[in-house]
Structure formats: structure tokens, C-alpha cells
Length: 359
Image (cartoon, rainbow, N blue to C red; front, side, top):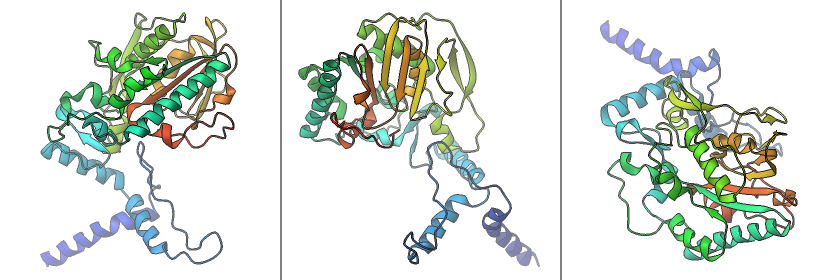
């Protein structure tokens, strides 16, 4: 009898995830996760979809009931007992530090660009600068360091670093050779006594973004709010993107700083990830800003918006440099891991149509 009860219980547990899809709300993606779309039995041309069974399998694997709860429980078990991450995009480091797996090549100095491709990147940035300056605008290029480039001490010891040069190390001297106006955030941020990146996120803290803002504006030589000396409050309100990928149903929050600003949004953005954000600040000391950015601009743009009467913050790639006007300030910010995107989405300085943003 006990074997029948055990068998029945086992079968019930197997059925619940699939049967629950009929009764429970749809599973939502966590952080940057992309879930498989619903399978289609027919193609757009009306023919039968030969891959429908594979699509059904992928869909169920991503949407079965209680999936996020099970993923979270499994991650808690593996990180707690084995100090390893079951999420392929997340590296579990010492003291609970989380790192983005896409930064491994940079961390281990495995250049993903050839010498010629790195030179093409430098030439592309130099061309963007020449284009903007020809239109009467200031131009500044900056690279946000990967988290493990600034804070490698908590990376797992199994990830060995070579003595070779990675993409950034190859690119930096070429930026100088090509005369690019470059703000070196690697040197600036590494010289700060504070920890300026989030423990459970792939990005800098608001404090890190505030100090980066000050450095960029000082490099440009423009009047600005000195956020390094501005008051702020701190509260445990931030749910890290890497934490959410690893523990989608986790409830832990990380301390984040909040500053007071006076600028206004032309249209309130849905999220800081919006492709286009526009701001105004009539009392600001500078004219118009075009900030071409990636996800590191989520925290950076409010500080820059404080110093410009108008600001256009865009994640469009190729960069929409045809919008540049006389007197503008153009800042191009890109995170270290995204440097190859400057080859993948080079700006067409004659006819820019744009494409999807890249995180």
C-alpha cells in the first residue's frame, strides 16, 4: 500500500508543473531572461510548422507552473552548499558577490577582437568625434568598466587570468593615437576608496554613477553640480539584476543611494531602459546633451540631466548622430563588455536609420 501512495505522490508532483499552467498566472521573465514564445502550428505563409513540437517543448520548459519558485529553491541550494551558480549567465563569487558571465573573456584577457578590428573600433570612434565636431558640438567617449575589472578579488579562483591584452587594453592606446577625447573611468573609479558597484548587480551604484558624472563633466570642462559633495540617503531598495536572474522569487534587497534632482522628464519613461528619454531643466548651466548609452546610463543619466537645459538620452544603435546641432555636447558611454558592438552597429554618418538597443 505504501508503494502505491509513494507512486501516486510522485506522479502528482510530476503533473503539477504542467497541469498548473492551466490554472496559475503565466510565468514572467526574471531580469534579462527571455522566455520562449508560444508555439505556432502554422507559419506566416500558412504552411504547417515542422518545428512545432520543439517549440512546445521549449515553451513548457520555460512556462511550467511554479517554475520561478523551483529555480529559486535550486539556486539557493547550490549557492548555499556548493558555492556555485546554476544560472549560466551568473557567476557566484566569494562573499555572495555576483558577476555577469558575459564579462569572462574581458576578465581573463581573452580578446574577442583582432588587432585590426580593435583599430577599426578606434577609427569608428574617431570618425564619430570628427563628425560631431564638424557640426559644432563637443564630443566625449567613455567606457564603463565591467564589475570584475574593478573588483576582481571576489571572482572564483578557477577563472584564471592570462598575461595577454584584452579588448580594452588593446583599444586604450589607440584612442590616444587617434586623438579621441576619452574619459578614463577605469583609472578614475579604481582610485576611489568606496565600493562603487553593486554586490548583486552588474552595474555601478548610484554613488558610482554620481562620481562618474562629476568626472565626465570635469573632463568636458563644463559647469556642473558636484554630486561627490551632495547629500544623499541610503535605503535597501535595490533588487540586483544578477540576483533576480539567479533567484527570480528572491526577496533580498541591496542598499542604494538616492540623490535629490530638479530636472523634469518631457514624458515620464516607463523604465530607465527606455530607448529614448528626454529631459528638461531650464535653470541648468549648459545647453543641449545627446547621451548615447547602454544600461550603465540608467543610473548615470539623471545626474547628467541635472546640468543641461535639454537632454536626449538614447539606447539606439547605430548612434543617431545626425541629430547633433551646433553647441551640443555629445557623450558616448559604452560598457567594456559591449565594445564589439561598435563594429556590429557602426554609425552611418550619412544616413542613420537605427536598430534595436543593446544592453
